[in-house]
Amino acid sequence: MPKPSLHVISGSPAPDGPHKRAKERRKADARPAELIQCHRCGGREVIEAKVGVLLKDGRPTGGTKALLCACCLLRGERVVLG
Image (cartoon, rainbow, N blue to C red; front, side):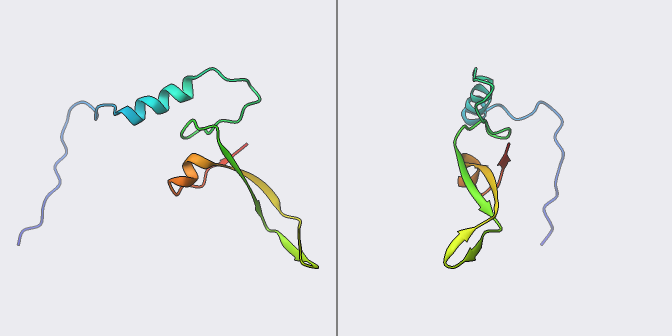
């Protein structure tokens, strides 16, 4: 059985889909300078996670806070903001 070969096609890039257009529109929206926005998807929802938390006397202490993009996290990507 012959192996399928890969051929490079010269021409224009793939057309923009509705998801890509919505993503670009969301990134271009006006926003206050203090508002956190994801640099990858343009989302404005965040989840606060703590890394390196210790348990002392049954209570969590310490750790480093990280803000993660909720939209990217749902897709399985870990994007740290700020």
